[in-house]
Image 1 (cartoon, rainbow, N blue to C red):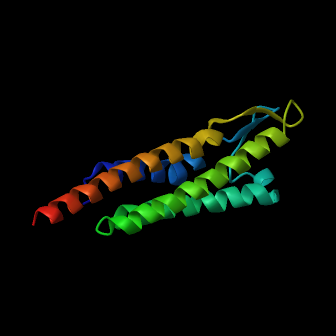
Image 2 (image 1 turned 120 degrees about the vertical axis):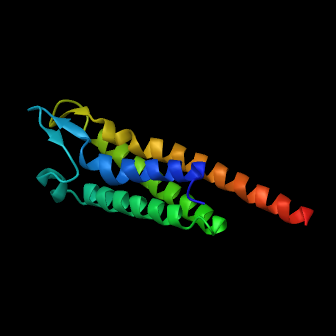
Length: 144
């Protein structure tokens, strides 16, 4: 059902990937301007374009998982796929932060780089809650 705890976890993943990434910077440049996924510098980089595409894909998958609450096994698989996507996002963002060190163009890393870590934790917690629900349903079926 929609009022389960895993729905809150998945909704928070959707809010982080679908909403907050548009308002939180990933990098801060030397002149003090913030680098968002919709910036013109980002549109020139193929890697950051893929980050944007995978963030949208992660948000869509979390919405699909929210509304597939009747099929817990499919919800579990969708969350695992979403975890893999967030691992890819994390690796690309770490690569970009290590590739651009120092004070050349980027002076500091923004909080947006840490969003995939939070998403992975929330998705693992959602999968544990889904597994708990599945075990509860199986135990009730055994009693019949």
